[in-house]
Image 1 (cartoon, helix red, strand yellow):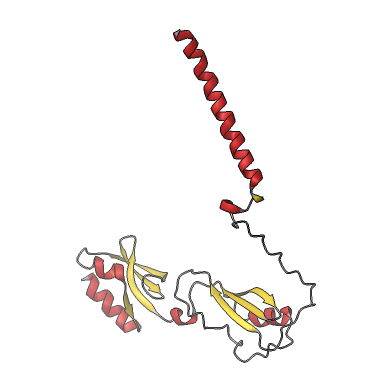
Image 2 (cartoon, rainbow, N blue to C red; image 1 turned 90 degrees about the vertical axis):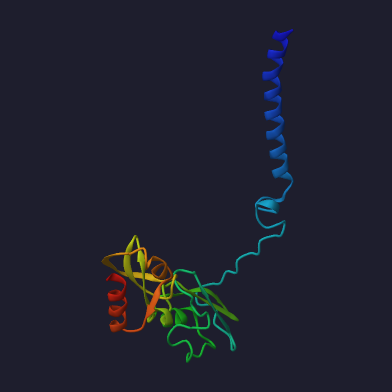
Amino acid sequence: MSKKKRKIYPFLYVVMVVVFLAGAWFGLLLLPDGPDSGFWGHNGRARPAPQVFEEGEITLQEGVEILTRHQGKDCRLNLQDLPAGFDSFNFAGASREDVLSLLNSDADWELAVFEPQRLVLEYTGKLCSHCRDLHYVGLYQGKIAIYSGTPPHGVLVEITDYEVSEIYREDLERGIPFESEAEKKSILESYTT
């Protein structure tokens, strides 16, 4: 009798695997748009077809909406900021090429969406114009370092030779902002002696 049980168990494992795989296959077939819908993606809604325009066919209309977005690199960009020249540019009738030539003066911005009523600009730089002018003293791998931006979202500028004393570690982890070279030297002297 024990011989029969040993022969039945491998057969049951094979049946269970086949039933599981068949169920998964039928489940994918029953989704309205295949694996890209339902749980897998768009909850049964059809994807909108991308709008395709012939080159040179589209121009901006009067009152175009200009939106900005930030890729979230290393600063707290004020999304109301626009690239240089955009505040005085007349967009009515402007082509894609006109907008791209205006953006060429600022390498930190890209044109993400160009439609007759909507223009989306994406900031791809590390720091916005506001944060570029801000600096703080912080930590980098156990050494005192200088950053541009606002703590803790800055960009590393310089690593000093000074090791961090445990007494000052918490202050430096939070970041200590400074406004001038003299203030930076004063902070470094205070935290390294």
